[in-house]
Amino acid sequence: MGRKRSVTSESSPFDSLPEDCISNIISFTNPRDACVAATVSKTFESAVKSDIIWEKFLPAEYESLIPPSRSFSSKKELYFSLCNDPVLIDDDKKSVCLEKASGKRCVMYSATAMMNFSNMADIFQRFEWIPIPEARFETVAQLREACKFKFNCRMNTRVLSPRTRYSVYIVFKKADTCCGFKAVSLEAVVGVVGQDSFRRFICFDTHAKGKFRKGKVVVKPEAREDGWMEVELGEFFNEGGWNSDEIEMTILERKCPQQKRGLVILGIEIRPTKILEEFSGRRL
Image (cartoon, rainbow, N blue to C red; front, side, top):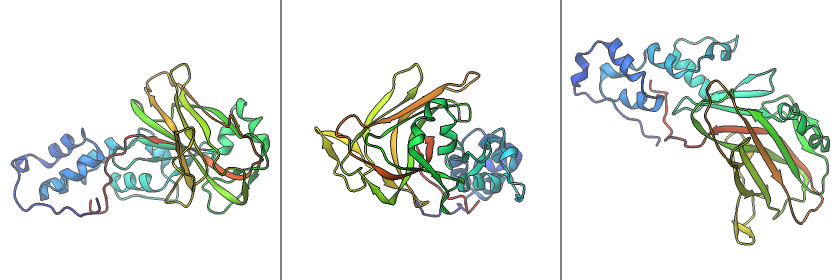
């Protein structure tokens, strides 16, 4: 990863094909394979730049995701912009971007979007809404005070890519006043409503040891490139199609309650579980 692949100087037997034909063939692959194909020959490198390919990799509603202030010289440039710069949607309560290797949608639901679900209203009464400069959303939710931590919400899957296995993450920070989460494990449950759920133990303690709940493995938070922390809650498969499903996620502290405060929640991010090897689109 990170190495630049040079375009071979040898000719390919496919070079005799019209460039549009090569572009059409490559459009049935995926973005990662298209970038690999560009290394085959100069002809392939030129064909991979075609809008024919990159428009196939863009979501059907891509025109609605283009910021009014931006213009793009090609569909390829637009594609990588949507990979690198999340776009706010639904009155700026959600953000969407594309996974670079596959073009699958990655969606983050803000804390405000989650509160709109009826079963979240009572839970979020224990939070205060504050703006912070580094957040992509207007406000974030900061825990005022609670003895036993509980978090539960449902979300519709219609905005996600169909036939895709997704992982769910809670994205958070700790305020200077944060306390009560040291060595505290919580049960996380994620699943499509009406189907079997994915269960595991998690914690918000970045310094916790790998096992501290009767020998059970507890998933710890990891740092993100945007300066926030995240911990994976679980996985589910999104079948998609005409009828969208609802996914439900719960985080619940069952034992050893202690006073807690200062946890800052940016939102819930849902992105494809199997991330292919990263690649750079800067050469294309």
